[in-house]
Amino acid sequence: MGMGRYLPGLLLALGVAQGAWAERIGEVSTVFKWVGPNDKIVVEAFDDPKVEGVTCYLSRAKTGGIKGGVGLAEDRAEVSVACRQVGPIRFKEPLKEGEEVFKERTSLIFKTMQVVRFHDKARNTLVYLAYSDRVIEGSPQNAVTAIPILPWR
Image (cartoon, rainbow, N blue to C red; front, side, top):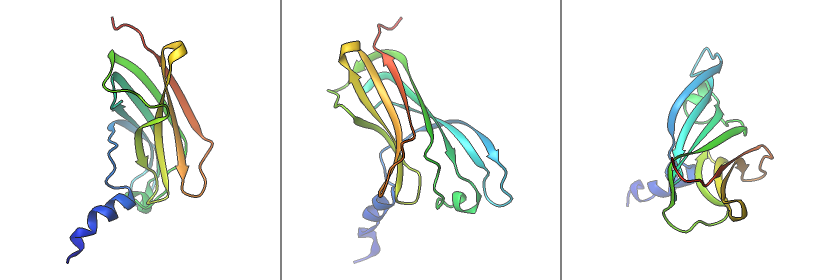
């Protein structure tokens, strides 16, 4: 039996085979590195998988240098999120409170950044919370955005 049977589990453990996907919108360099890529702030977009008509934009730091270039660096915990209505809002299936809508690893194995969704029914609003966590301890750094559910133009 070859290593091929262990590869999917290894990739999942390393966070490589996650379902999250964000489209890179742009980036700016913040620190010049002589070797490897520069430290950057990247802006990415993703659509809510269960709510049609909602797109979220994330800005976050990406560590450069040699470790960052090969995927071994740990990115900072800070993240900013802004979600917007980009079309008629339609729920594709029932929503769960605090449901994860986006997740991406920010270190080799121990740290992730994620976005979860809440439905504030009393105010007819979708609320998105972005935060970072770590296996041992998380970070209080977070960002929140809200979208009132309104008729589309």
